Every structure is written in C-alpha cells, then in structure tokens.
Image (spheres, rainbow, N blue to C red):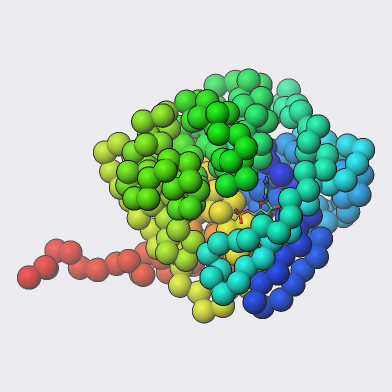
Length: 305
Ligand code: AMP
C-alpha cells in the first residue's frame, strides 16, 4: 500500500560537534520519504524554489518516490539552520527561512488522493489541514509538528488533533503543547483531543506509544557514534508508517512492531549527515537492526524469582 506524505523539502545547514554541512538535502518530507521508501512506494507533496538543486533529489526518485506532487515555485527554497551541542537530543534552531513555503497551497494530484496511509510531516498546521480536505478516507492519518508551529499555530493544531489517528512529537514538544511536565499526563491530554495513538519520542532515550489502554516503550538503538541527529524524528515516522503500510495490519501487536521499525530507521538516520546513511542501507541492514532491538530488550520473564 502506498504512503502519501506532505512535508518540507529543504536545504539544511547543520553544525554538530563532529562537523558542519551547508545547504544539504533536508526537510521533513525528504527524510520521511528516504525512510518510508524502504518499505512501500511513497508519494511526496511539497514545494521547492527555483534555487533548489534538483539533482540532489535524484536518489529519492531512484528509490521510487513519486514527485508528481512536488511543486516548483519561483523564489527561494525553504531553509533551516540548526546546531547541536553535546546534548545531541535537541536541536537549536538558528534560522528558519520559509521562502516558497510562505505562499504554498498543497495540491494533491488526483492519483494520490486515495492513498491509504497519509503522513502530515512537520509543516504549517494550516497546510496539513488543507491536505486533509483533499484526501479520501485514508486507513490511517498521522501527523507531526514542532515547537515553531506549536507557538504560531496552536489553534490550528488543536483542530488537527480532532482529525488525525496518530501524532508523533518529541518530549519537549509534548510538554510545550500540553503544559504538563509529566509525559503520561501529556499523552492523556492529547488522547482526550482526538488521536487514538500518541507517540512521544525521547531521542537517545527511546520512544513511547500511548493509547487509552496501554503504554509501549522501545529504546533507541545504543550507537557508539552519532554524527547528525537531524531527521531522526521524520525517519522514525517513515519506518513506523512504512512498516504499517507494507503489512496493512493495524493491530496493537503490529503497531508495537512498527515502533521498533521506526526506532531502527531513526538510528540509521543519525549515523551520517543529511540523508546519506538512509539512502545507502538496504532491506538486510534494516532487518538485522530490528533483530538487534529484539535482543536488546529480551529477558526471561517466565522464571522471575
Ligand atoms: P527532525 O530532526 O526529524 O525533527 O526534522 C528535521 C528536519 O525538519 C530538517 O531537515 C528541517 O529542514 C525540517 N524543519 C525544521 N524546521 C521546520 C519547520 N518549521 N517546518 C518544517 N520543517 C522544518
């Protein structure tokens, strides 16, 4: 089954304790597509400006990402500049230049409108709402957001919560949105506003999936070297939704497996700058890492003293 994603297609400039990269492939839609395309065909909707080096997107097209919904507009592409200090869990945004995104109106091509899985990656909540008006009864709609939009689009985000099945956000964003310091309370606050599932990511400390009845936790893969955390969240979402779309199974047990696939894809994303690592791995690397996750949390609960 296909996945439709609407998100930013950006040029990122990133500084980490291990190096620096300028104007590299970035954006929530780009990272999501790089990850989800390991599982299913992806349809990407977004906008780039006249300055976008389109050859940088060729590896995505080669992975089967359909870019019929990628608009080319006159003007500057979306640019994000961020820095990570020694705490690699949180990015410090140095600059966000919306460029062509400030006038963007997403137009979902007719052939994308019946996509069974829809991911509203991190973009303006008003654009996410416009997308929902154009799609036909997806099996699952999930969304993401970030501090930038929680500050400026709070009302729209609350409307959106009533229309999605699932939201992914990191712990800081969950606290900012709900004004609850405790994440269990924060998740309940969100569940009370519409979604049946809330995923709260905690960077190198793993990810929780909350429903009204249950809490599931998956650790982050303990890597020895992390080069660039940018895009880990979107890659997590790509693995999570991609796996659900490949299996077509929305049972609780499968959603839990999907969280582990998401965590595996997030762990690959941070092993290299930009999308480099995500675009060089294959199916076997992914399966091997998922098996490593299973070993990481396996213990004998049958023989507790
Ligand atoms: P992540 O690290 O997964 O949370 O996402 C990082 C990506 O989000 C970067 O590639 C940025 O280009 C993109 N990004 C940063 N700020 C924004 C924003 N305000 N709206 C949309 N995308 C953004």
